[in-house]
Image 1 (tube, rainbow, N blue to C red):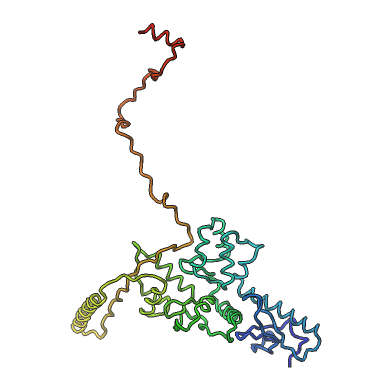
Image 2: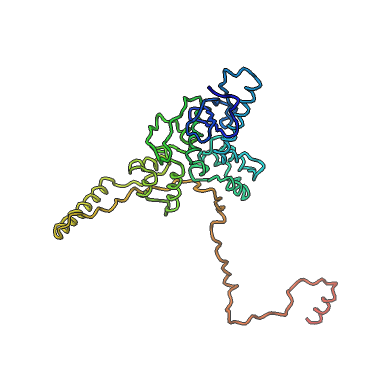
Length: 368
């Protein structure tokens, strides 16, 4: 039996659960969740759910309204604490976003902290240095593929966004999501709601939903290591994503990177022959030295990809007419002069037509 007079009293605690239920525990040191006192319902937008108090035995309307106001205040405080970076996007008192940056911030707010770069690409050219500084203060990362807030990869923020997204989209709660700390999870791309996984910070590429910070780590390394418009997939990329070779290729293909065409059969045959030769040599050496352990083979080289065309960062590209270095001005042959040759200056005035009425005309006649 819930002691409604004690709900919200100092010393207890509210808890929001993944199924949308809110419980009250009078003893804050008690690990048990306590008694259900309310549930959240769909509100005006995804980040402002409403509270439905479950107190059928509470007949006093004023007391019930007071209780609902108390739980609503706690809920809003809880949301703003866990998802502080999202709510700060709309905070106009502390470093407000302006111009194109404000439009980007609004879209990130509407999508729970993650959007595809293509969705805001039209706003990027209008970003001034001041706008970019505001974006950095809001802790937004403008990645080449995704724009997101890195601080939201914490389990509490992921779980709460899953709850809010499911509630707003009328899904059955609790929403399925990766276990806390998982880097990636195998999914079926055809039956998976990509918007959901992207909104909670696990965008879908290939047949994996990947935690966005590790995905961004791979993408950043790709562009940093690219040379002459190409990059090579690395074994460390598989380690970062927690996947195998085929899954890595599927992820890169899904991102829009084009694999360099090679004679795979011939290359695989050559690699196999080289591997067999190395194995035979190692076995022979092991037999000669009576070694029990054969040295492991080297890791095979992975596929080469072309870097995806388009903007790869939030830094503005220089204009085309400024990218080319100015060629030094070469003087005309008639203007060339030996450095050691002394310069000669003429004291003769420049020739010009003289007016017949001018005194200089008379001097000219006398000279002639």
